Image (cartoon, rainbow, N blue to C red; front, side, top):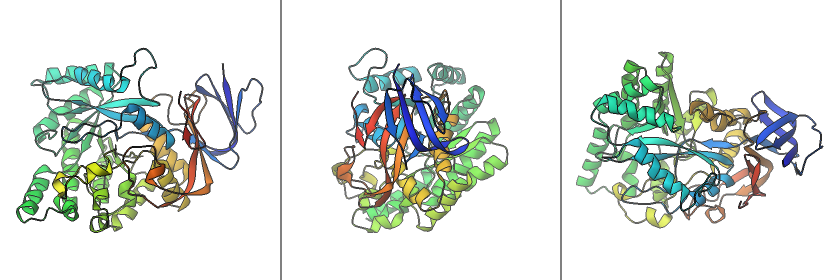
Length: 453
């Protein structure tokens, strides 16, 4: 059995920062100690001066996404390789249940994409561990069938579903449908992720802008005002409270949405807020800049002052997780239309998650390393039931990242491993770099470069 000893690192453990050694053996963390024995060790990794943290868990990705209009060019080999180079060792993506399809058929279809032509245990395209949420688009006619769906999902290891309050007619669920999902989820202890935007407000604003010829990308934020997000979150949480459903509000772009989650928690609800780096770091001024297409996403980027408020909520614990909402459309796809309502929404984000939070969060004093680990590793593992993940602790999976905070790098799209061809953080100065990454004890990144199996 091969064993790897990571020596002299600054280990971010559940008990805080510990300076010492980490032993990886049999795919697990075998020991943590200020100075471990070298007996039986095959591989030595010097982590002097480096931060050693558990592999990040991205709870919100869209790898190989096909909306029926646009398709991202990445497959699961490319997408998970990109994640690994950013220090992410587990992604939780989505399977989509399309109309006239049950959840098991949807799950099988998505797994076929992930596995590609490979077969057998451990085969397939994914280079790191992954999980799936189930995206519900059309509910079965009876609650008994919906209960069966929930039971089937749990039996297949899926602990969460996602619904939308917008994107009519393809993904939208009205309040009655939401209440059915929430009630079924409560009966089966399934987490409901919700994209919160009031569809009527978005539709009316979009229609008015189109009618007056205001369709340039600069108008994107006006079509999806903050009110639409905050109102939808308030309504979703109220409906969920009536039946006791656990709610996970995805990609909170504004502090007012997080405030709704805070109030729900104060009422005794299980409510969780997620944000993403783009809402912490970018703002609506991008729409008047040279590259407004970089900011086309749903919800849109908000006023500059919202960034500081979100950082404060992240630091305080009001925001529990930071996913990426990674969506790898190419820059050419993003530029296909000059109209905001016809532009592909979403940006790449997996490879830049850790460098951005380490730089703009830890290095700039907004959060600590232990808080970063809570937000990006421990909390996603706990919320979505990923046993053995999210911490540097004996018996846990040997998912480990070595981050060197001493080097200064510059973010360049050309140096990233995705296919987008751009990053909205082009030219940003980054404090530190992902140096080495281990997935279940196997080194998959060395000195910033991916190592094929």
